[in-house]
Image (cartoon, rainbow, N blue to C red; front, side, top):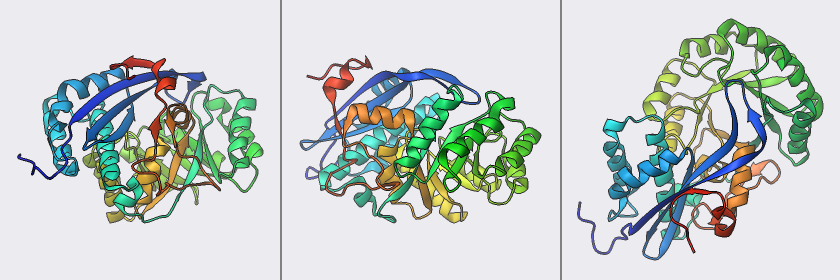
Length: 373
């Protein structure tokens, strides 16, 4: 395609990756980890630079360099759907789920940041706000935490003004109810309490746990069974105690996944992640699907990105203020979003996603890419 001479073209794309150790060992119901990797993409046009990222793996950065970069350079910076479609076609033989979609995500997010900066707008205002701000819920409460650590983290979020918090369960089924009881005692009777099993339970086990969790005021049961078990999710959704919502979707990489989950009636709340589902472009598509099924929509992690995108989706209800991600965003970026009064409110005075790299602070964590002076 020939881009008109007057249109800004993408002139440069650079990709890098940074691996940050966790503060303490972390775990959920099915996985343990000690580090998190952020893959960062910079794109530039007409003197403006956009940044986007995914929380992925070093292999994601290499895939961007080797397969996606050539699909972006020279194309119109304002024509994101064209570039997005070209990237999706380019990875056809590599497989759409997994690192391919996370690679597209990082690039797509950077392109939205660039477009907004070229036009002098925040991403939220570029997309058009359905909400001036969006509620955040604190998320962490890892199964590797002691009971005291769990209570301290969740209680601190409520003290800071968040109205709901989420904790991990499933590593030790025998201890889960007492850990949830400790969390309820730490946050008080009025705060929202969410639990996330990350698919650790079987169907009947999840139903039995749901009944006990309901007695402790749990209103959100995330991935009680594997998110691939749509029949199991629907079973638990239909038989869970009144007032308890079943949520899933964070492992969705394309619209077909989200549509299958919605058509199956598997969730009360659909989750999506713009660092996995092919960027802001894929995230907006998932939000539109939710609207067509009259299903609430929730953003999974990466709050500095999702605060903008969720504000543009009418059926979006909240953003996960996930400990690992907001910690890294705060370490790496000036302007990282912070809740105020329990809400995330993108700043219209800061163009793009409103963030700038703290390059010196980032360099010691770099595991891929050229050093930037």
